[in-house]
Image (cartoon, rainbow over all chains, first blue to last red; front, side):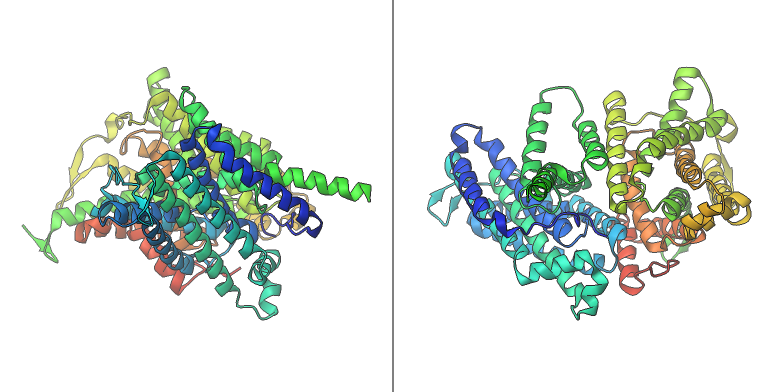
Length: 324
Length: 295
């Protein structure tokens, strides 16, 4: 049994209402920078996209990757290098980050999908740690300093990203593009086969599906989307450092997804928002963030494994059952 | 000065010794992981934190109570084991029915709590811990000088690994443990208290990590971060060895430690990643690991 099997996202009944909700959410996101600090909002958007990309793998294929920081941080390095050293236009630089993350996903995924479940988690963790060591040693990442002072530049040559509001709307556009790509993947025939693999891998094999190819495909897509988040982050915050590739980052994205709800479309976004808000809140106090993250992990695993959104949906489902 | 493959012999022996010592810790930790995983089906991410806890227990016993190395060698693993028993009873035991990934996530959270708390209290810098007076100094082995404490660590870890292996393979308790690993329901039906066995196993695995921590304290500095970096390498060791076999975990630990040491001599840049590269190669050639069996 894979993680997240308890809950299946497809409920056609919800379609119209979820479209209305989606429109409201997009309108709220458009208005948000007038009420909140845009930098924090952009941080939430980047991490929310990262968590959604991670969720594509755990929520819909049932594979727990403990190494997604490699794709996020790797893409951040590639994008930062292209924008700063080669002077690339920001969108092309981000696309280079995405391509780099996809290639890394292909290599790491090719090795990791040879094992399942718990081994898959350990292998992805080990391989991403290897990548972190490489990042520490190769010259272009500048070791402990990281790549600092990345220029935001002009999008497509004429949109000045140094304006905070412009940067925010570009980030929002990238986030929405990533989110709808994931939605499209999950609700495609390809996505249905992924869910079939999650539910019962042997049966999927016996139906004639080349399970390994589907898993690898999903892994590469998830890595590329994590790269989209990482590359965007590098342009928004104008730096790429070792923090982004280390295992703590992989742990954080797992926590965001777990807290929000594994296998739900909006759970990872809720989780990312909460974790970022908590980190910002705690940054001012003396309480160690790591301890709090650990405590949330323990509480989530012991008390609500479906996550916040997952529990709410489950509650709604039960109510619906009782009513009918 | 004699050279081997163009490398001065003392440098080569020195790195092999360092490799053996690192390997001793890989072996002890992967052994504990394998024992816990065998019965509980839980990958104990907190293993690195428990190793750190063992080292800190020795350090605090000395600095707060003046209790030295030799009693700490017994007391620290007991403390770590006792904490682990509480963790198993209150938290881990609730997760036995669900996907094993949740066990990994729970212990990951616990590792973050322990590490964060110790970092908060003691800072990220390491605390020195001196070896006991009986084990200070060095001996001349003819081809190299060896610090006595390092030799002791290699021998002690061999004894610990062998002892654990004998405990599992040759005693009645070990027989119960192996039987429960194969089929827990059946063993319970025969009147063996399986929940108690699970608790004891987790305690034993954690105590092994704590013992390794005490042994490590005089070699590496006692620091809150000493466990987390090590545990990821140990995961790779476990993947290479395959978790099916206790002996496999031990052998793989020593061999990979020595290989890592040799890499430091011949191609130092790669020494931090060599174990991961070996892991990737093993996965491509033999996905179940060198000593593992396909499930």
